[in-house]
Image (cartoon, rainbow, N blue to C red; front, top):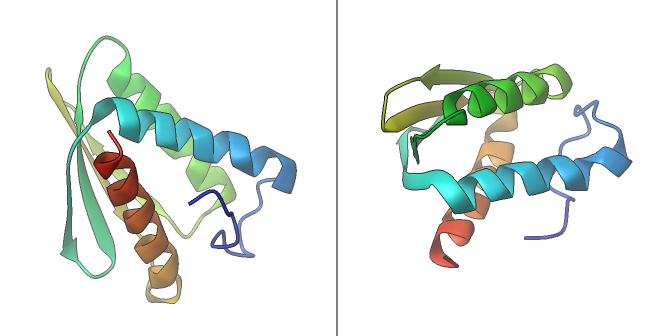
Length: 111
């Protein structure tokens, strides 16, 4: 999904920076994703393989994403070998979560 049309208008990240941010998330998913689930309609649950500096990177990337897309809620739970990342949205942004989930699932299948 290379088209960024799914990015909502409420995102304050400058348009020229959006492909770079998407590439950061894609790289994280491609390298670290071990499982993806949708425990609730407004929440995704990702498990990411841990390693040196991974938890810090996930937290930093999530913080930057929250800065430009305040409708996201990120909760990170650390572990030695596994990092949990919950991504939540409000009801108005459920289609954004749908698109993100589809993007993550596609990245997972292409590995």
